[in-house]
Image 1 (cartoon, rainbow, N blue to C red):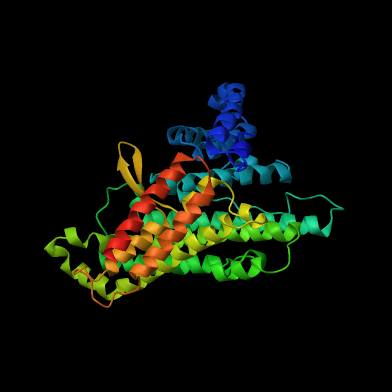
Image 2: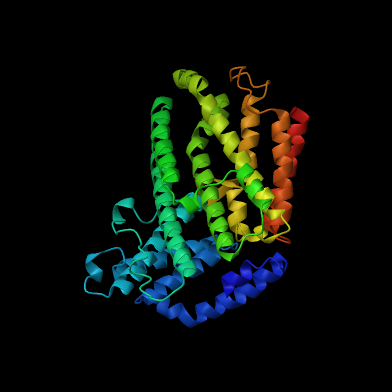
Length: 411
């Protein structure tokens, strides 16, 4: 009830948060003592739901603490182990497995959002992927229900595999978010980036046919088609979610090159070789960053400004805002800083490609002032429609407006 109230966009944000907190406090009051024991599968599921709810509020510290309790409870129950569920009925084994993967997904999401190390190492994720075979042993259901159940399983499996790619990106390009490793040389960074790009492309290629990622142009064409039935709407929503996840991973993947370019002004003379190499090969990553960020903003803009049922396709406000934003990790007394959305990536590309930037080759012209201004305008309109009365969204929009002014002056 707390989660449902939080994502209800028919009322303003302040009232939603107040009403949802009532349900959250009731749940905590009923289950608080049991959570500390963590002795049942239901408690782990409850903690995961509470963690997801808290992630969508301004209670990031509580979200992290509740996540830690969920992980400890899951380990205590042996949800990570195939040995621990031997002898259990197949349905119960499947529920335990899906709950464990829910823990893993939430762990990766928080690591990405807060810029902190993952709690669950990838080496602990050994269970087979979820299966519809053991979860839907019901006979006599309609073919439509069977297809919907099958698609839900394929979506969950695709999400698990996407977050495995996320683990590799955080590990290989962000040093597990520990901020203690030596900086990668340009050659090593590009090698890792290329291998990870192949992994991401392979994940995208192997998606179920009904869950293939979309482009903004494809989504626009779909909106002009005949009205979708209920099953088609579900499939479209799942495709949009996977598309945003894919685009976000690609942006995270290429962002270290963008950051390295932006740091050129503070580079030491000893890094001149890396600088020269990045000048030669970095143009591709800048183009990928620009195209990917523009796709994210265009898709979100198209959906949140829609007047039909497509408006709800991207889910809750914090999900939408995150995927039109990128969190730049910074371990600073446990806090993290936010450097704005995909539009900020566009603005960063604009700064790098600006004619006044003497550290970059003059042929870096992938982003013009018009590109930056148009994209920032689109992002501002999108944030105006994501949520009403939400001061986080309002603050993001305010800073976007400042960036827009700077882009106009520089252009």
